[in-house]
Image (cartoon, rainbow, N blue to C red; front, side, top):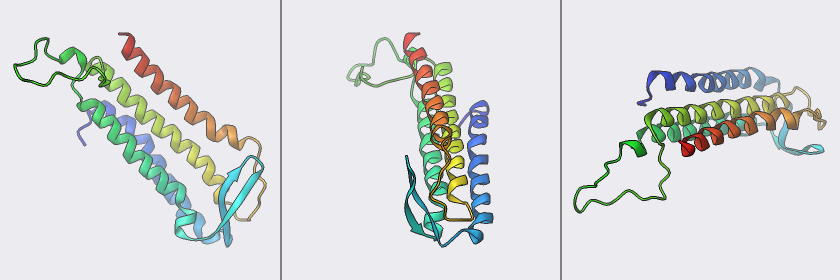
Length: 173
């Protein structure tokens, strides 16, 4: 990973959340019932799975994949040549940069967008952590608290809004 140190610090909360989620799951796994929630709908748990490492740790695996994907997107954002560093007159026979390619306007903008992606990743992890609280209960109870939908949705929406704001801010400058 080539992240600059300030950007790397924005990855740390997501990695800590992933470690906490994995440790919490490992501690809870022996106490899980034979059936664990597979899907939570608006009326509560509406699908069940037999307890296995795959079914119990699915949120951890998915969040690990999301973390890798978001980290790769942030890294690629930092590696793209910003618009303000492109040459005004491309070399003869050079392929001109595509106008449809969404480049950051500047290095500072690229860092802002990369940080917002890593913050979005952390907020996705918070949502997954809330879901784990339901998944890793000791009893196979289909009832789910009414606040769960908001607790899982609000962090993702907030992170998405912040990422869009960073991208729009870049476009307007």
